[in-house]
Length: 507
Image (tube, rainbow, N blue to C red; front, side, top):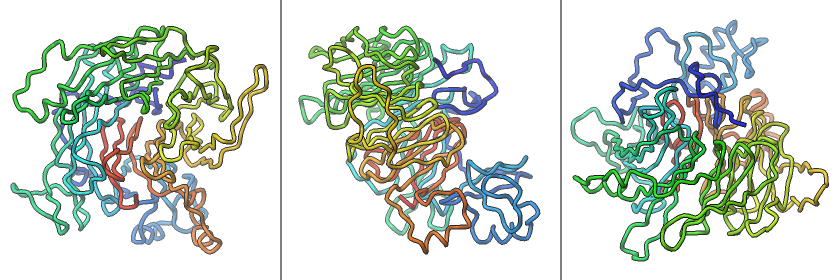
């Protein structure tokens, strides 16, 4: 079943693939970065949220003086003493707004697109891996969700973010107020952020978009970059955006109308869907797609560059397929997560098109899932009830036909978020770090390796209901997806009402 109410103009609760984010002013100039530290809030009260969402010592002292208005972590009136503000948990009073704590970030930028985007993906570049210098450059693809009645304004957007500076050491923004670029103590050049974009027309909202690169036979030439876009129309569109990426670095490049058209359109699905993934172990291109009828299809790129879809669907889910992920280590294996509360493991070689393993992981919709690239037996999932957990696939056993669906125990489970989980992703190089986005307008970073001893437990006893594994809380309105940059360690981008590009000092 679809989770979107496309005609809902009220914003509502943010869902992974659900209610429309608040409308963005389309008259805003495309690519304008918002300086979060020059906004005038006039009479609004600003509350800064740090690494764990708590006020610093100075604000705690101020709150102690106003104990009558103090709040507990759950937003209820405190019985006495200063309150603890926790982003996503404590309710804001009328007139209150949140501002980031600059000292908690190494980089922080925000930008708007003509319409909000439910989904985006990074495109690997040729600038090198493990980059740590500033200013940073990133390439992404995204699909828009235009206002109801304006579907013809939807776009597939190819974006280049450049001159992404770091925060000033004194806590200010990295962007220089001078006309000339400055250099910080570490030799990093400070400059104004730049957004460049190339747009391909779409006739429908993008539910999910993923990028894949096909290596070139000539090592001196860049790879072919493909995007798969799962749309509200039920069609899956495959584009070759290689010329659009090349145009960023080749002034005067003209994109032809033919280059804006899909190279293939998958019409196997009869309903829309949100599940989409390219195989990391099939360089030439193998795509999985899943829909709201619970059906999943495999599409393979041929030697000639075309695409062929196997019309025999994988079946078994009793609800919509919300997420699909290929195994990072086994080329024929994939996992699916569904609104029926199950995760299922499949083998594409199976003639029965039935799941090899089925487990019940939630009593609510399983919205999102992430397979660890570092430790391939670890799988993270997030559900509609706000719970996210980590599973050890070695503990899952094949399901016999007609047997009851087992309910395994996670090796870690967190009930911190009180709204649906909209995105979850393992850190690309650290199998203990996970990024989670939720409908409470937050992105949280977690370190699963953290364990408190008795003394540390006593020191944190005053912060109730905050797991010690919680590293960082980042506020982001109507956040839908969050991804780690694959080549800039610790850098993340989240999408919702706007794009947020950030890197914390804690990861």
